Length: 239
Image 1 (tube, helix red, strand yellow):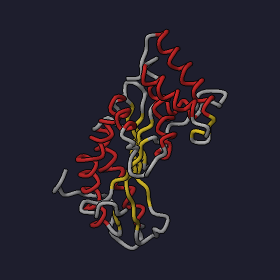
Image 2 (spheres, rainbow, N blue to C red):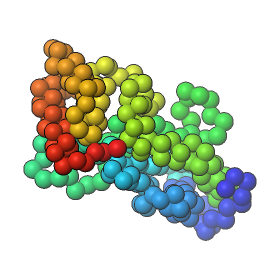
Image 3 (cartoon, rainbow, N blue to C red):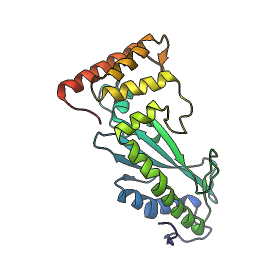
């Protein structure tokens, strides 16, 4: 996609708002690329599900400071493991019907324009048809070179668990407390049935006098043990 010319079907005149140029970019360039990669969706969000029902999310976010003449945007990335989603909704009377959003991700990151300074949150800027064409090509390049490969890797449950072990839940998460990491590990490991590592994690949680992400450790421990036991009985795993 890099270097290709991009024809967009919005006239470049004063009547066309910057947000309309973005809509065309997403509908005619970004969306089709993601669907070619197996994602489903439209508008500003697309999802890719793994065989174990984990979900990768690509979401295009516009700055709240944008106006009719200028729109700034970036791409949010997230991965929502199925057991994490189930735990987060365990108190609902029925299974959640809504699909995961970017902010539901256990792992989260962002894509910025090519050449952006590392650690600096840069945004793409759209003002007219010409700038929107440049943004369209760069968005696809960034998704192709980094975004989609990273999401595909993390949809492999073993890769995701390895990332949690490294305390890497993505730049948007920042530094995370050991208790939160143990919470995440317990939820993910339980999906593969009983294991020595799960027992060790649950022991750490049981010995921790605090709470785990606002949830009392005993609740999580009971849930994880029941999950692991159920997996062992039916012979299924999340990996």
